[in-house]
Length: 410
Picture 1 (cartoon, helix red, strand yellow):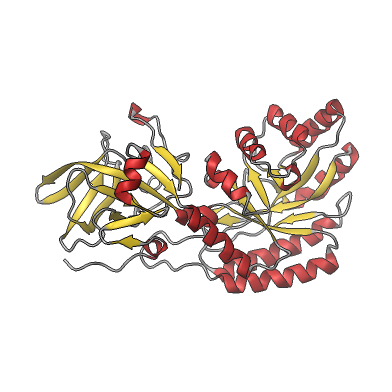
Picture 2: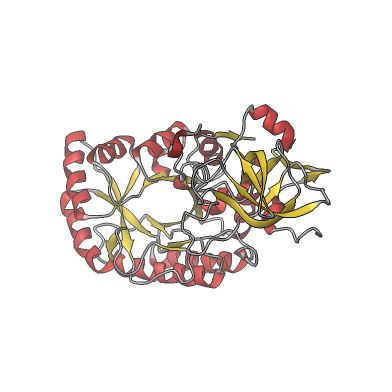
């Protein structure tokens, strides 16, 4: 077999002879340094490159926040905190990690449809911005603010009356568990003012994993227009408008990288409009997957090579319990292969059609299905690209009680 075209994800990483280079190290040496397989590795250089690329395209006035839910590994979050303007958390545990980075609490926000009273109290005490998602949260925050002697800083997370077209996951529009329906927001704003909470703005997030710049630009414009309408009912001037994110990364053959240029131009226009219509308000873009997804790889080791009725199965020490998304069981309707290579045989000419499977007793434990790969044997290292987001923490790590993978920042 001839070598197939390289997926765009592979171009992020260098290759030295047979070895994929991750964090400046040949893969076999990195595996020895980690001390065991499987593992996730996140490349600092690629994090730097991605943020720098965004900074080149986004207007300087636009604030860039990292949505920690994409990857809350403490070392990675601490590194990202040096590169971005703020952090967005989705749980009390994520909030503790965010505060440990030294990020100014005024630049940390908390979203989620089911915040507990303990989490709300934790957030008020920390002085972060709470994106409220229901009247219940407003009532709870009023009591917590009175008890702590400080008003909670709040923004309203709005469920908009539109969707982000072509998004992989729709987070707004229609009936949703997220945020407050746009038509109900004015009444909630009145209650926020009545309760004496410190209103600061709006969080409007309509979808994720979008590769079409025109769809993102349209959603941003509609978000700004909606915020303008709602601002008329606000108890005080808007200080911050979180436009959400939705920027996608290419996972599968045929997908093209997102074009940032039109998005940057669109944001410049919105920034100019905000200077007049929402004076003093900051515009925020909140990104998770786009910042870290392509900087990470998942690495597991071949432990057995089996041929069943003419088809090669590479059995590894990793699998769907450690990388649910790559197995196709996290958001895919029709399973597609993530970009996968034999990371210590990058220049091999001997190739074959093979499937990469894990050690679990289920046919769902599949990392690559009938994929052209370098011929591999026990001891070789399988690499799954696009693994920096929604990998480790989005997987059923306790399934069948195998050891958890290691995570390293290199």
